[in-house]
Image (cartoon, rainbow, N blue to C red):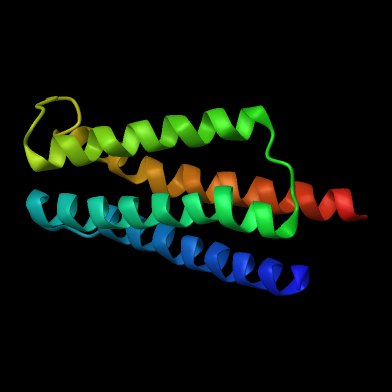
Length: 129
């Protein structure tokens, strides 16, 4: 049964790679900024949902201990994504985030989620050896 959950977690990891590639594609594609922000906020929220599944569901089903550093990194990513959502909704205005020169900030959630998942899976596979 554990093997089944590991395979499902790997599918989420592959999906996260595709999400990250999608974010990079929007960064290099010339489009209006509203479309850019809309696509990236959707991909960021999907990344956090995927990371939450990894953090709470798959780690429990697989029996992998989540170290404090991973919990802190997860919490910071959630807070950062909430900040982006609030900024996108227009509730908060932070000019630094909304400038075209700093639009790579919007790719941080998918990129760091991919890094989090990669290290999480790699350490588990390393421990199994």
